[in-house]
Length: 406
Image (cartoon, rainbow, N blue to C red; front, side):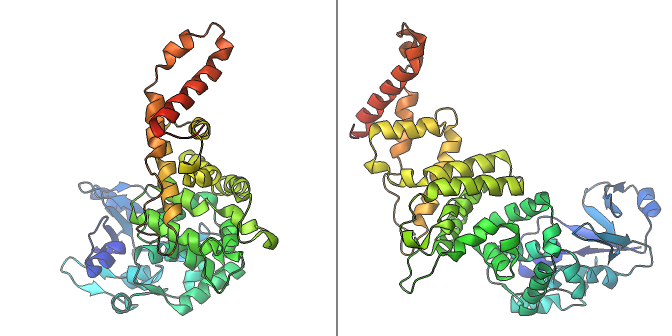
């Protein structure tokens, strides 16, 4: 029995990056031998075991054969006769198809080290087309390794997978998993760009792809060239280290602009309402978690109002805080402001400009939370008047703190 460290751990070591997770492949062993050594089985589709002490994953070397549509349409052979190179050959990219023995010896049959030096994401072989998840993984790696490019021949294979309909068999849960991971990488715009280049974005997220369809102009303006603006805003959210719900909301906040009639350009009137409808549809399609869905809907609806904060009346500020449930969900409201911060800075030359009155809404919220709502409620003889009296008191408090107009 031989054991090799494989995949991302070897790749990251060669790149000089911290290794987060170590995975191992075991050659020349059977499931019974692994159990006898104290390993705990965890794999359902093929033999994967956890080390009895480190709890790291050890998988028996295996080959794969396409047996159906989608990323689950495979049969596996993990017999003890399967060799290391055979196992490496089933992997997606050459930089992930390198193995290291205990003595440090590298097995690199597909020149992954050369592609690391060339900063290239290149597929291992023609079997790449059999697993549509690999399209998402390549796009995600492009967002992580920002100085790597995708090999032209790999992009072509990805296009073939889209054209053949293979990508249509991806389940929503897996698309969301890879999309969420890619959004949390250093430059998430590259994931979207790679997906769009190979045609997958139009099949997986057609409404996002439509953002790039707004007519382009020679005199570049991000508010017209909405795809450029959204990608700049998305990367800004990554630079600020914002959480996943914020980044997801930034990606979707301007979906309605992609449906703006040509006669209404460049102002995009009514795009917020259109965006809300599309965001709701995209979240349902992806089966996005509730926190991501709810924030994305709020950002789509209110990002324009928040940008106009200093020009709003006190009553309008209070209505916005009430409608976004900021009093009960202050942390989510802060995420809403973070997404609007990225929207504001997603413009050429605006990266260092401060958003107008960034503390305006937080100060208003603090003023409302400092009120004695219970006392106001007790002063109302008719309980039906309580909501109106509370609203009036909130407006007065905000007007006093922020010196806003009526």
